[in-house]
Length: 157
Ligand SMILES: [Fe+2]
Ligand SMILES: [Fe+2]
Image (cartoon, rainbow, N blue to C red; front, side, top):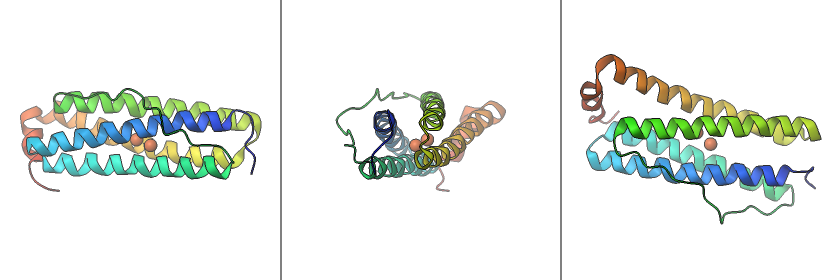
């Protein structure tokens, strides 16, 4: 199926961001493992793999629309040097992704592409769950203190 105006471009921008966060979250997960925070490692790794599934969805959809997925470009991978910093830079990425997806949905409405719109709406839902999880961690750190929070992360969930 031929893509409507601007859709392949839009999807390639989203793909670039998804691939960027796959790397960022994967690296954060592995750093957490190295620090001995097995529980955080597990959660953050699952989030990275979830973003990889998003990338796969977007790639499949671009090909379905007879476009070419661009795998060449990556955005900036921001690495947090502490757990709170990791949470902060990941939250920034998730919020930026929701903004990008929301603008994408508006574009889909404008050009009348309901299939892409539906896919992006599903993706927004997932990214909002990611935001919710990160914000919950930040709240917990505030409530119980960083040391208590981190000592809970040593155990595998
Ligand atoms: Fe994603
Ligand atoms: Fe996400």
